[in-house]
Amino acid sequence: QVQLQESGPGLVKPSQTLSLTCTVSGDSITTNYYYWSWIRQPPGKGLEWMGAIGDSGGTYYSPSLESRTSISRDTSKNQFTLQLSSVTPEDTAVYYCARERIGFGPSWGQGIQVTVSS
Image 1 (spheres, rainbow, N blue to C red):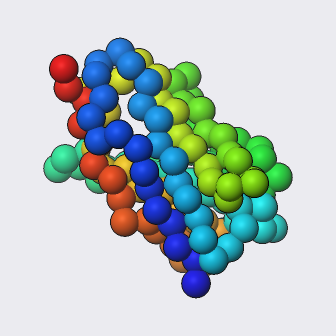
Image 2: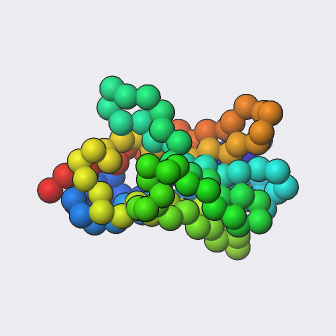
Image 3: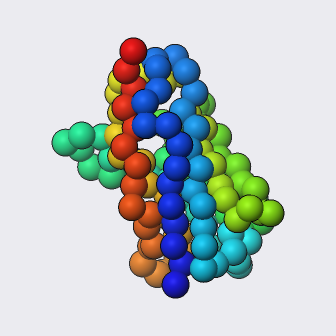
């Protein structure tokens, strides 16, 4: 069974870049048809899909975050990463990585709390 684990700093200063890593086990991030996604949930708000990287490395981003978001991968480590630049306190959220496939339910990591504060 696929497992996903988020890692990275829990505290980021305003204007800096947030960088998180998702480590995947039980499946390859190059497996056909899957998308490897980042989703976040600010306090008291709903889930927000941020973007994804596909099985061949193509990237897709939410229009509202595209200018600040970069998703990349390291296939040798079976990891994919999120970089969110120029963060503000509004970026404080629980960040999740997930595996998605059209027509199937997603698999989620446990989430990691990230706070943007001085």
